[in-house]
Image (cartoon, rainbow, N blue to C red; front, side, top):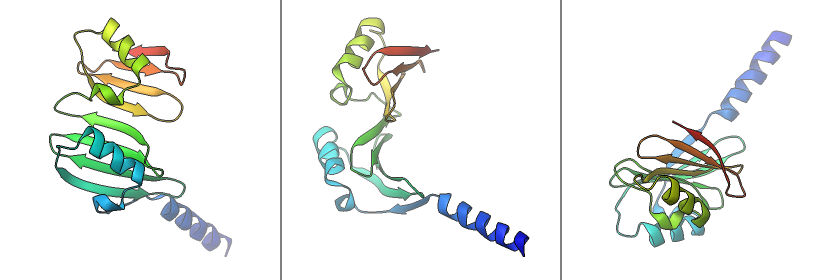
Length: 143
């Protein structure tokens, strides 16, 4: 009996942790996400808009033409911008981070910007990864 109870608990835990991804319409995005997309990517066409739910996490993903992927948290705040075939618009990068990159990597452009809540991660076109603290100080460079 204990074995069956343990198995049921494990099954419930795995099911709760499993991410459920569902296609939604642009109108179902949080207001902040809609404003962000319409402000910085208004001329792009949508490929797909999804919501992903896990036990304690809800996030939104917007895929645009040209290999642009955007991620938003449950409040609609942008947490990631990835541009596979181009560069992340400067306007979405915090100014202090942008100035460090322009000064130290003038021949590169940003392909990915991520704000994971603890730090900012930037990936340049030559795959150099830069990590910035919450106070916007450069703390790590990976080649």
